[in-house]
Length: 185
Image 1: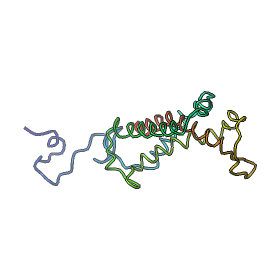
Image 2: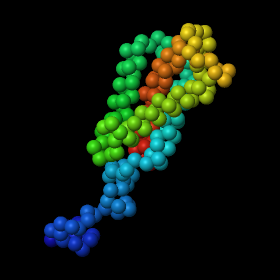
Image 3: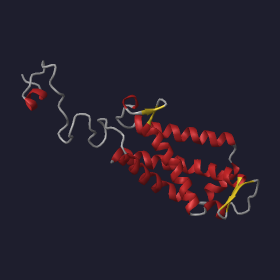
Image 4: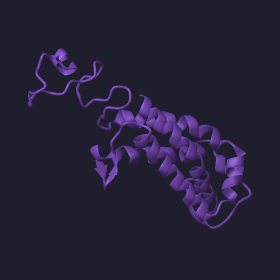
């Protein structure tokens, strides 16, 4: 009886140099179809992450409750939020999908795809917050030590601290959008 591989390629299962059979809709055996078979990380993957990250970040940047939460968060809670973002991002990329982090390009032992995902998750929230002037709107009564005054803008340490906490709250949701977009497309 002939195996599926033999039926598709006409080659014997005993042939050690025969290439593995790729799924019908993949160009090469190492390309990814929709989700699953691994594929090298590329700029297009970052673009997909940006779309998903910005899509889910927007509503949380302009919601007053997020900024109220950020005001009351301690440093430990902000670190816990960071851990949640890292765990959700890693789980979405490598546990919920068929990717193998050991087969991806790395920087300092961390997969480039994961670095991109976390960067996109935080930067999308932070960029939208600045673009919409959310700190100026929701934190107008906060003042502290001025760090920099340049080009007509002031960077206040207290406002920056709260903005970074609000960014970490928004990143919990942004990472879901970014990872989903990266996995689906």
